[in-house]
Image 1 (cartoon, rainbow, N blue to C red):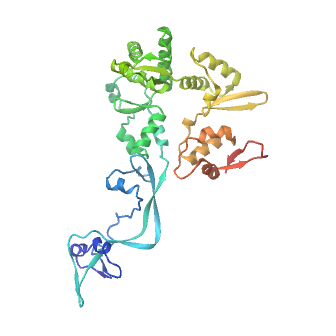
Image 2 (spheres, one colour):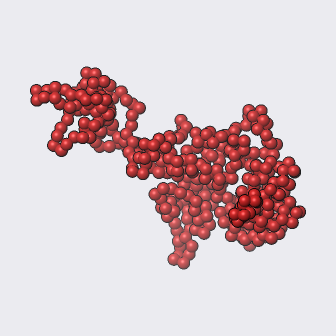
Length: 395
């Protein structure tokens, strides 16, 4: 194997000559004049599913300087992992034209290698890294005094994040990021993504309920225009009122004639409303179950029925002596990565019965790992007797 005298000439003997090589034929490989100068080149191994995404330029590399980079397609996130190989590979670029060296036996085609690659980058599908999203949006929740874009722009101390800012900062695909924004009840206000201050959202929901009762509108079917009109006249931003309806209500399916007439009906979601009031009561901390149930029933709007099963994944219960205590512990407040999620769970409680643990790991999605695999990896299971409920502790 030789070294080429000129980069341009040797590059012309390129990859096509190697790819088209017939069985039992041979070709000379030469070092290019700029061999090993391409420190920015890496081999990336792809499967058939990902190759079209790469070729159509539908992928991005996301991550900040202090983070491990990930590759994102429109719908999935992949960790980039370097894997060394026992057989190194020569990188030979495409040719720019015919080229040959002359030997005693006649013209000999030459392929010009520009780099020796001792390994490849592999892509491993991973769960999106969404913990930063909650942290970023929690820094600046939307409050009632922020009624206009002008007020926001005058205050340079506020952190304001557009969609493109979130894409740059959060390691998740666009589809996963949109789903996460919905899960944490974020809303786009004047081009910026925000979460609404929880006390302000309490106020908005209570005013909607008050107006429904005052005007004798059904909880199962009320006009959007009527609610927006009366809430707007009371000074509530219509964007926030609609956001509240989307969190605590559902649009009612209408006939084509009703839709053509411009009607839009909503019904309140019984579970979402009941869970909201349970959270409000438990903001003060741990309390006795009997007192909690009394207060909860008092707060539930007339026409709705609260069931304790609604609070699965929202509260924890503990028996202390003859008394039962309850406190808020929401799955939505926990980290999204498995290692951090299980660490938070075992910090809250050293041992978990399966019926209590399941609601807090049900939403974990790790490509290639089932819930059982996650339990094996992060917990230790004990079962005193065959009839006893299994108990999980940290591994």
